Amino acid sequence: MRAFYAVRLPSPKATETRLRKRKQLPDSPLRKALETLAEMPGPVHPVAAENLHLTLKFLGDVSESCLTEARQILESVAEGHKSFQLRIAGTGVFPHIRRPRVIWAGVQPAQPVTSIAKALDTACTRIRIEQENRAYRPHLTLARLKGPPPDTLLHWLREHHDDEFCSFEVDRLELLQSVHANDGVQYQTVATAPLI
Image 1 (cartoon, rainbow, N blue to C red):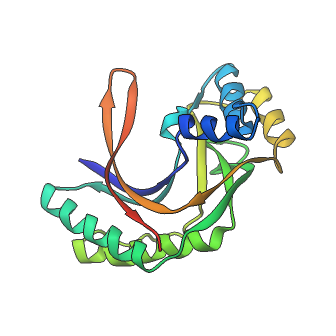
Image 2: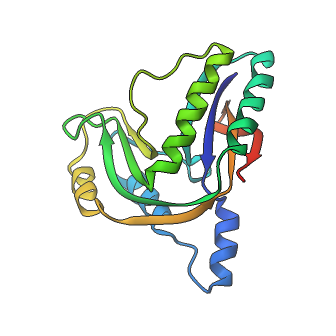
């Protein structure tokens, strides 16, 4: 099973309920961004709204016995970190604007997320998962590209470079697994651990 640690964005239904209580429209800037990316021509493949998450540590293919330890690591790391507010703002690409493969939205502030990711990365050596060689850069993947970017994408990136898409409280960490379905990949929760 392919597994990873993540922070999920609030579910669309929960977000819409909160927005209705505040008498705001459920069409968030993040939802509009995904819809705009979906309408672009060519190789732009947006992430489904229900799959939006912030990856903290990718574990890869893990066995059932490894999952038990991965759950314990999740709980241990969560117990050492407080809940916090997170803003999803700004846009960018990996690896480079001339040949983008991932379109992302930024995460602010980066520090609580970076600290949690580092703690998970270090703890995972107990289950023989290697530490990352490159620096962790927290981001929310909005879309992937398989080919040259259309001009409309480059224009959209410039136009939304500093936009704020949403903010929410991060009060839990999750261990997720990738499940292949007829309509693409789905992410199922294996374990959840509350932050203090």
